[in-house]
Image (cartoon, rainbow, N blue to C red; front, side, top):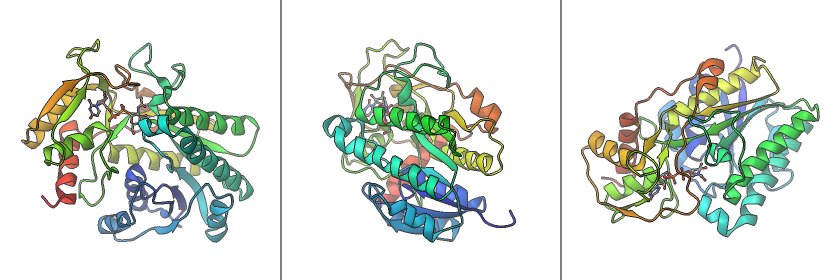
Length: 343
Ligand code: UD1
């Protein structure tokens, strides 16, 4: 690359944002991060520096302030594209605090899109979720599967955000967008310098498993073993966060070299393989040699039975495929947990 191109990464100190920042810098991009640090920590920047030798520019700003993002664009006139991760993501909390979610996830998006339009920055990668499919009728689920009524305000913010971006593109604005629908991102960077830092008691399966294995939680509660699945526990498509991060770099390259076929492209990002909760527990124990207590409890409200991705479209069009084996991913999550707990 002759001249380094600059990418704005919102939520860049977060879990997926930090891993994507590393992959972008490794591919020769400059990265400017904005984050309000509501669910992340500035020390993540030190972890990024340990991996790639430089710290990206960082601004602690709240995207719900109308002109905050515009000021960043005015300061960094070389920004060519935006990857928008910044959002609240706890499904349960969103049921209790819907307004927080609608404000945080949608007002910020609206201000971002306005600032992009005013500053003629037209390339956007948006962080969406397989939650938009609900419980699909057909598996694996393709990008053309119908969108179902969201079962949480969090899920609804992802659906509405997709609609907002689509509407702008329909309005013949200059915007080009790639919507990436993530399945279940897990694991940590192989160097263990960055990883997932959940706030308080983790909601998600893998941080709960690693914390239980570390002795911080008494036991893992498996939510339901009476699903219509081979072992009765729910099935998800668990994708390594580094594989996921790499797809963002490809999406950015595609936008910046005008290789996108249409102004709006949507891709599933998963492995294409489903694993049950029990399979995840057993694979973790086998890969790490660590056993931990678990018990079966009632289903968790709002959970779907099973979902995994059809990744054909991402494989063919992006030339991207998840590569890291599940065992390696689980070992990376465990290595990270041990590191942050000084074990
Ligand atoms: C949820 C959201 C998803 C969001 C993701 C990350 C939905 C439908 N999904 O995924 O959009 O991107 O969180 O925040 O809203 N489990 C246990 N015990 C635990 C924790 C989890 O058995 O202590 C089970 C769950 O019941 C589920 C699986 O493990 O079957 C994965 O759960 P989790 O990691 O929370 O992710 P999702 O609910 O799939």
